[in-house]
Image (cartoon, rainbow, N blue to C red; front, side, top):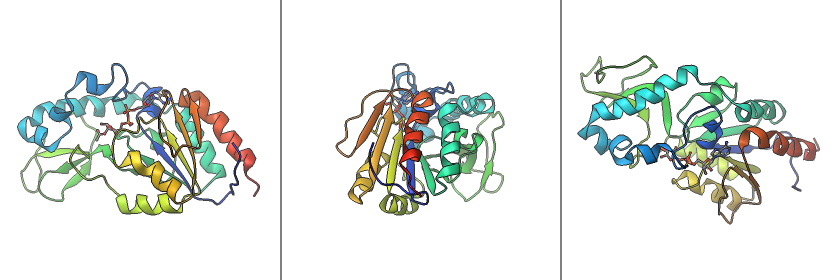
Amino acid sequence: MNFAIKKHDLIVILTGAGISAESGLSTFRDNNGLWETYNVNEVATPEGFKKNPSLVWKFYNKRRQQLKNVKPNNAHKTITYFQKYFHNTHIITQNVDNLHEKAGNKNTIHMHGTLERIICTHCNYSRNDLDKISEIPICPECKNYLRPDIVWFGEIPYYLEAIEKLLKESVLFIGIGTSGTVYPAAEFINIAKQFNAKTIFINKESVNNHSIDYFYQGEAGSLLEEVFNEIINMCKN
Ligand code: OAD
């Protein structure tokens, strides 16, 4: 790699399911990924929830229960180390787990929601809740169904305005562990590039995108340290 970077430059890291894979959480589109076992339309759309809310809750309960025992891996920890050097690093994650937070990563935006929260399907009620749920939970305020705070297919991701601002102002964009198939996240690298950011991508399988300046193929847990140290070494002040 060869580009200019300063300690206070704005850096955006986009993460996907691949960064949590080495912690034991399944990705979506790899062999044995979640969308091979489950029908995405049944468990990750508003229509699916309307049709069969217990099935949807069953799917997310499994994920919610996993969060209690799962631990951040070397990739998450390496981001914590990187952020100590580059304070103005922001993470946009498509992941709904809490591993960035558990690793002590700062400035994390959960654009697809989080498993830790439950929201009402009708009113503004919400709460943090990772307890086991056996029945479909009911809103204590309006008595309608509660649902996981996950952005399903057909819904608009969270914080898009703030994300766009970060992408346009970023000097460096780093994508980690995402197949780049789900929009709008798949487009973030193109926006950053259009606004003159250098772009790096780290992924287990190759990713085809003309906006990538530097691609590293392999597992984030072992590759990130090397890539981040190279960036730190390029930083002049
Ligand atoms: P995918 O499952 O589509 O892609 C994960 C990527 O991570 C794949 O390209 C893998 O090759 C790569 N990968 C696997 N293990 C890795 C490792 N140890 N190190 C680096 N890379 C690794 O997951 P996402 O791109 O996150 O949305 O999927 C995006 C969205 O689609 C998700 O947020 C989810 C899903 O449907 C919703 O549920 C709304």
